[in-house]
Length: 366
Figure 1 (cartoon, rainbow, N blue to C red):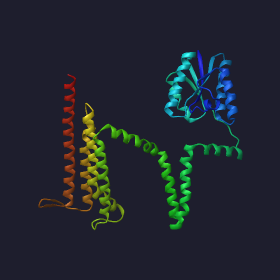
Figure 2: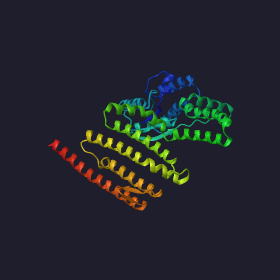
Figure 3: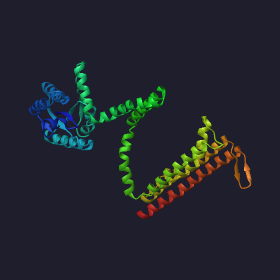
Figure 4: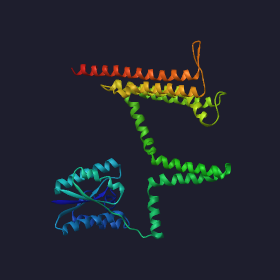
């Protein structure tokens, strides 16, 4: 039974410093690699990872177990390229040495992401995390700051918001009170933290690719999404104007209710438009359509009707139907009943369309 001791270098830091192509396997090859990497950058953490891999291999051999030490290096181009390269290397080592189990040596959280790839091909008995102990003096702090400033991702994530905040402090103090200036800077830092913490940067980065795919796909939903966005903007504008009308209010809970009352018809129409576009895409591309897609437009419309009824009741607006004038209570009841009826109609239409699509699919297969 052979144990493969793998030292993982996902970003190919070792390969670039030593000028070798992975995988590197064998005791003498890895020991020579330690000298090459150490001479290129003595303070590199990868030197400690290579030494740890050699130490583990020596302990296994002292216990009478057959062990092979190897270095797996990825790529600094992208995460996908790095993972695929490591997967190919582990396959090559398995074919050459036929190990039955492995021990993985890593020195960072990024390298730990490779463990499932190795696990899918070879049993992993242990994961050895190398933590380098540093002396707590001014010199070590200097080198930590130097490494921090060399990391482009950390610079853009931490230093840019900090620099913008420091620039805003004197500008805000010239025009506002210290309380307002402090609140503005705190809001800036909070926004930056949420932007990274919630992964908004990832969503924004993929928005262009998603928009390109949507444009090239020829879907109906692209038109309905644009229309829904325009209707939402109109709804927000109408809701803001409703706050300044004589029937509106300027503060408190009623201000929120007034905004919702005037904007909800447009927002509901925007939601129904977007949901209808999604439904049409499913009808055109899928053989069968799921019930949630069919119920979505009707459900959004019924919710908008009910919310409009409640906000009208709060402001005691009367409902005029022909020559009849209904008081607010009756208006609320009619709105709720109308919402329920629209929802029931949606369920009925969804059932009919689902049966129709299933029938069409069966006929095509026959």
